[in-house]
Image (tube, rainbow, N blue to C red; front, side, top):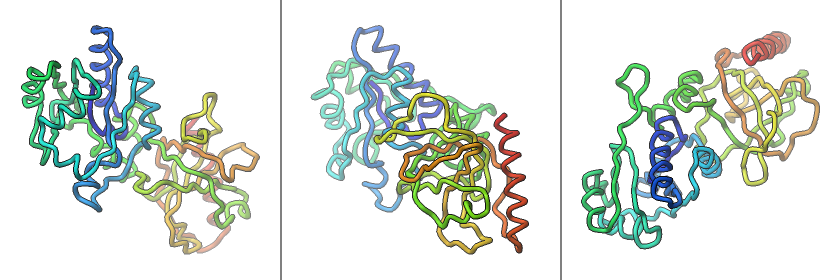
Length: 300
């Protein structure tokens, strides 16, 4: 088994998960990923919840693709956060799951006030009957920056979708339900899907992006088959019309249909430009047409 939040399920996570899957195969037992809901930081320090790169459903979907047999989301409570390392290991790893091997990143910490580390886990494993494996962290091309959810969030918040995709191994995706907006896009000839996202969703920096849109089922799982289509995506408050609410709106190219109430995943591939305020509507429409063609060219 392996343990962690695994938000983003980036390439570094994939290395750790791959080792856990391999250990399970060698032992002839199921591979288990143990994660926590809500994010532990929100329980220990309310108000400190980081932006979320992947919903819990998306996380389960991604780790299944990496070969994990069982995805276990453990409710993280204040009481649970106060367990000392030994009791955490006994309750979470041994009592219910009967772990034979535990694979974690070399910086793994656990127990009250993060008192336990990989060495502690090894010592407890000798007592409880499991082996512990600390995996070196995967680093970016410079050899200095370890791949982490914090690093990916910084890329997303800066609008650097290429760097985010390199770390994730795929484009960053924002999931949500299409709701009715002001319908200005339709009036201007560019009807957009206005996405209602969950709290704490990691939304890229304001601007216009090229990407694609995929359909999700009622549980938020990706529907198999080709994407709904290429999209020009706007993130921001739409300063031309003095909208105050920050929105994610996707214009799906060459699509004609009603998406209201549908669950969609919007993948961000490349930032085309920053958010601008236009003095004339005609100027905005001209720029939107350029954005669409640029998005088409990028995605081609």
